[in-house]
Length: 356
Image 1 (cartoon, helix red, strand yellow):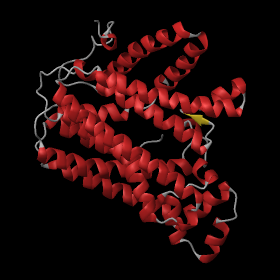
Image 2 (cartoon, helix red, strand yellow):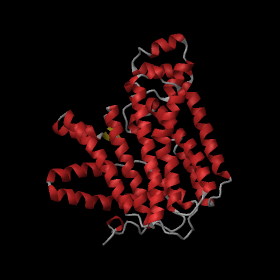
Image 3 (spheres, rainbow, N blue to C red):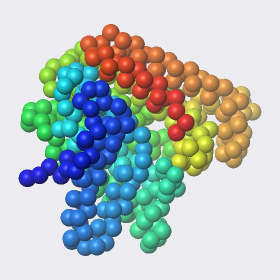
Image 4 (cartoon, rainbow, N blue to C red):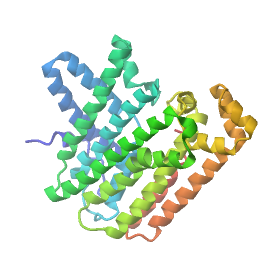
């Protein structure tokens, strides 16, 4: 049976070593496009409405994004893989991470009632425009569920021995559990932000974002290489948590001070929903009594001004620097290929000092 995830000429531009991130992203997106075309055709044959539903899911998956998770997984694998080892057989596994990411985004946007993502309407808004809010919410949940099922299907197509794929799957499952756990804590925090703390906000960042953005994609990639790599696994864990937390801390800043034209999200969305981010928790700790009183009653524009006046954004920037330094230090002497170390050092900066 043909492997539909690898059809066409999408892989011709991938060099064996080194691989540019652009070529890698193109290959992952090609794998996703081929896989999703087959899934859409299958649902279309059942009912045209299902085909339209699946196309909306596909469009959400393919709608840009930085493809950070497959990139970290690739370099986690390349850290020990031989220079001539081809990546083609691993592309389904790398694409799996983007399908999981879409599941998380669709559900997160619904919980936060976010209007846009990547400059486009969110899933629940797309469907609500067709048949109302209740339909929009229900359809968005189902889109997220479908993407998670697709992720399982695509992972199963990875060309690896069964024992290796079982270890990859174990790490993938832990990644998913931690992401859901972090999301629950995030929702819990929004119900009573006054009882939250900086430490609790960082716990959310660690589970909701760091674990499935950097930490476990790296470990996932290492598992794709097979074998035992205990020292490198430990270094990846330290790097992944540190850089992953820094990634979320940058998100906290962008959620308040980012340019919506660049971030693709509404401005001050976190303040509007009352999300107890590390930035907001620090601002409350650092605020004067007068600032704290105003912070609880002001509109979001004024809240952003007060938060800046407390010095909390500068403190978050310091926390980002500290975590990037810790991550880079962790892989400095790790038993890793030189090109992978250089790529991970570059990624530590690129993903944490970004405009969107």
